[in-house]
Length: 227
Ligand code: DX5
Ligand code: ZN
Image (cartoon, rainbow, N blue to C red):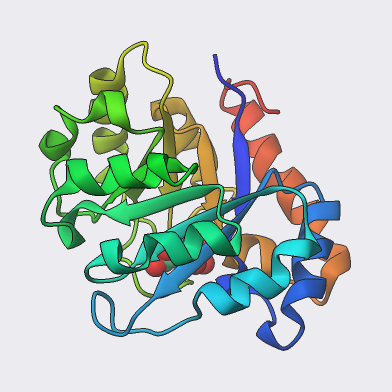
């Protein structure tokens, strides 16, 4: 059984002191740092891009997990790799030639992930499973933090797990993950949990460790081994 990875989404952090927030959540026990890129086209919201990632890269030595919610991600893969991304995850719905895109991500020296919106069936993964390192099952519609978990995604996680079989591919979930939902998704097969609101809420950085521990504990209580 793979250990559970907790990846705080900095979308919910204080952008006014982003580097400090990343260091704080790293020290609080984050396994990865999840960076949500939104282009105002693929999703209605806008966030930040490679120059921002570049300046905060030094704030943590942990894995930088870049989630591209952008149209035509191929145009920018090199910039994200150069900015310091370790994982680059693209949306299947945004790629005209998904196989080409994930192969390019690996060529750039990064690990490749494919994200699926809640209404996207996992069939598109079937013939590229040997070229990817992560499947991101979106548990909300991408674009905003603080939305409610879509429980129908639990069955999709189980389907993806079955498709992956013994391959070394992580199953990530993103959206509405908190102490109530973490155990359910982990029991279904998710092993990389993104959480924004549930980790960054609280008065200040002193709450982050407690929030991360609570999610880990929820996973352990569900019978899945935590990291
Ligand atoms: C949603 C983003 C998420 C988001 C999660 O489009 O991909 O990473 O920040 O936020 P919470 O945990 O608040 O649902
Ligand atoms: Zn995300």
